[in-house]
Image (cartoon, rainbow over all chains, first blue to last red; front, side, top):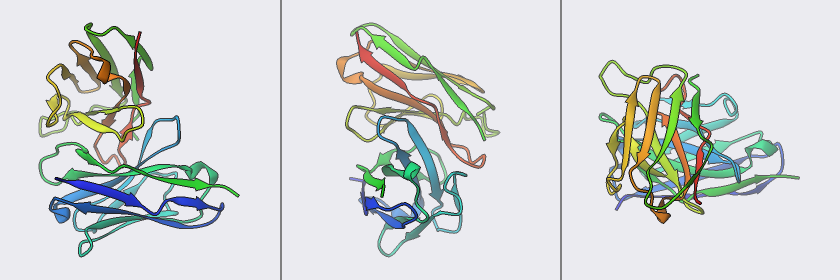
Length: 120
Length: 113
């Protein structure tokens, strides 16, 4: 069964850094794009960014561009979200999700989420 | 960037009755390959989002056939033929086109009357 498990969330001061991990299992990791989606408590979903299947392409929303970096490690079947210069407005639950390359089947597997709190 | 607008934002429903949610895109989501790049997701209370519909009208694996997606171009609708109590939660539409980013709608909260 395909599974994604996020980790690395926690409390960080404004201006600080944090790296989230998303460990994949039960599927061929290298054939999927991986995405990060966040949700401020009580608010809607926001797509943060993605990395393509071989790690050669990434894209992020403007609000995190230049501060967040998405990478992947095929040997560990893990995707990372490195977050720098964190702000209070980055406080959210962060989910990772996958989408297939080739034919598109939606974001069909999601993790359980990891909580990031940016506060002094 | 493409803007996704859902309506209504809140939808009280009666079990056994039909329900529908609208999603409008600021640009056409009809790709040159003939597919509409529009997904629907449901986030049940306390859970991660789950995929319901992809490419406008294709039900994801395990999704009950009471859920259906219709529409093309800029106007889409999620229909529930007969609402069940387990369908409560927040429904989101999303466009999966790198223009350059993907975008969710604001969400529609469905609750039992």
